[in-house]
Length: 242
Length: 182
Image 1 (spheres, rainbow over the protein chains, first blue to last red):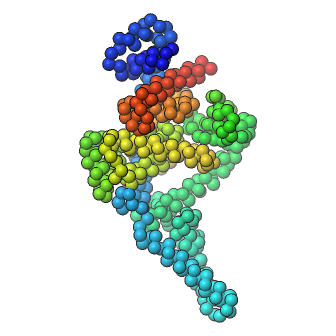
Image 2: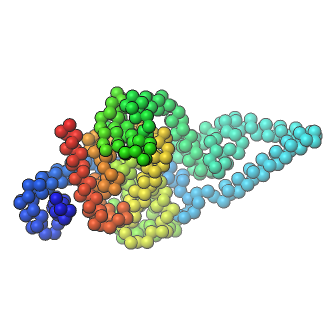
């Protein structure tokens, strides 16, 4: 079928033609065109009957809460306030001073080194008591892992935290926790891939339909890119495309 | 939904830091942004992350809106780009993908998911389409955007959109036919 004919038939099917004369004549005189028209009308009906996806009220509340926590004060500006950036500098200075004190104590053998060590140790203890965080790790701009349990709870409850980035870190840690709980799940997925002979494949998507499906593709982009669907329940290959 | 003209005014107020205006825009578009993200990403949790990233970008880049399209179209374009970024990241780190889950504390979530779920065979058939066809069909036939709007969102000429939508539907019909007969 000519491209022009296909475009005409498709446009006739979705009623976007101003003048339908040519398209109708095509459908009436060409069986292939009529079949194409019917297929397009049918798929449009299927798609049109699908309701839009909606956020639940709970999801909306969480979305708004998280968003307001992360929004910068004004558009186009960083979410990190100036005093927060300065706190990195202050923390760095404190570490340098502490280290200098420790080195001084070790090299010079004076009592001062011991007192710096005690301060440093005290900081460790105090921070650990606050939730197991390492000193200054929560100020790490590279994304240190540590934050307190209070921070996580505050992020969950949508409290306005003095360190907006910590809310994100708290959520990241929560997700990391979810991931560790799913290590069993991960091994099941690997077993499924091995059982289906798809060891050099990678899961590109997971679909939750009547049951869970894995959408997998070859890791090597140079080989033929087939798409395979695997049902997680029984590790059976349900569909291969390509 | 807020009238388009008002939305341009609202976005101008967002540029001055008016959070109430931003909230109005967000409430007007959040369901549709989420729906687009869910169709493209196929995972509710990822779609929620993408929706949040979309509105963060809208707030941060409000001053870059040039008024050449409706505010809604501009927002959906951001959403599609956020989804593309997520897919690219997931391809680099596939082990980080998480399955969907329903929060047990959310009584409305299950109903929302049920109402949003495509029939499995449609979802699978959609997933097999090349991304450019799939996204054109999602925006046009599932989300109900007009062809000029889809062209704006995907940043391609309208002729290309027509072609992608028509061929996407054709491929989808063929896929569904194959599945029904197999």
